[in-house]
Image 1: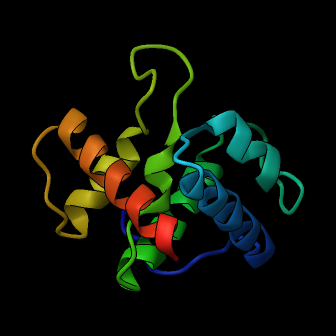
Image 2: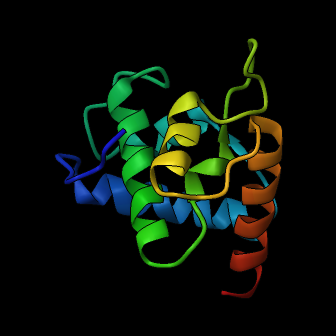
Image 3: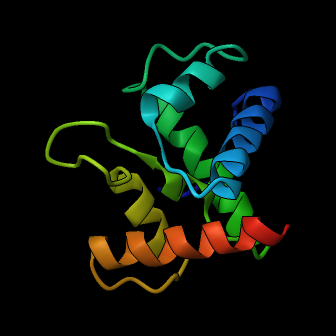
Length: 123
């Protein structure tokens, strides 16, 4: 997932980012459904399974990483299915692409969730 630019509405990006920061400050994950509920107010996202939503989450995390902050999209997880409780595969691809430490999905999710919670607890 190469993130070069973004055709997303900056209002959607800003509001989803703020939503994720609030989740991080409360040590909470969220779901794609909840992220979509925020994003759809600012753009044409057809649902939680919309690749445009997933890409926007990648844009948010890429910007965070480029600014020296932890990736907020680690907090967006599947609410059911075989990936229940984990971010989508795009999150893990982005971590590898950005050169972040990657061991396995469970460890990577745990470590990045913790760093995100810790960072936003004091910022």
